Length: 290
Image (cartoon, rainbow, N blue to C red; front, top):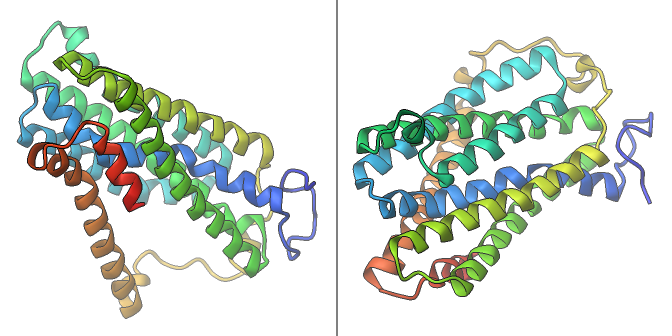
């Protein structure tokens, strides 16, 4: 059995299987909460009384925060390092804010107001916090690869394992959702809210277990920053804007994510409101697609 990463001083050698597994587990919390976010957030918000426009504002606030936080997280991690610290801090933010979004409007309880405006603001704030933590976890976890090993094959294996856990996370979410929708009642408005909350809480619990596996099995990479980039000079931030390949890759990625996110966010509405299928179909249909 391979020990935790960092025991082997030769970074040009292949990374062991257990080390790959430990690394891949590190993005599980992000992946399972992201799947829950895009699949059930809009349904949850409209079920608790927010208008479709207000629910969209909450979702948009999170996505804007994610876009900005990704840029700043990358810059700060490049400057200060400590990948695991950033990963742990981001994971804590994700767990707390995600449970707060599905757990109810905390600012409403603090200020004693049940107005729709206060609910929209409250959910938007925690949606933004969730995405800030999500970005910090994502960037720190992904950027670790280049400092874990110099072996190009091992880097591909690490990235592949990370992507494999994304599939595991999605299927785990829909398995949890299927169990919740099947075993709990949905006769009243409160019952439906509690279903989403149980799904969110169980998703966080599963994700946090894998975060623990990652931090216990993976050591902070000791490969020096100059070795990570092959002793090359630091590239200016505007370098990529002069490359045609940058726009080609960005266009393909953006369009792909657009199709995936839109279909993931609105399929549940189609299944329940238009096809009028049973509640468990909100999990079964997604699991069949994945």
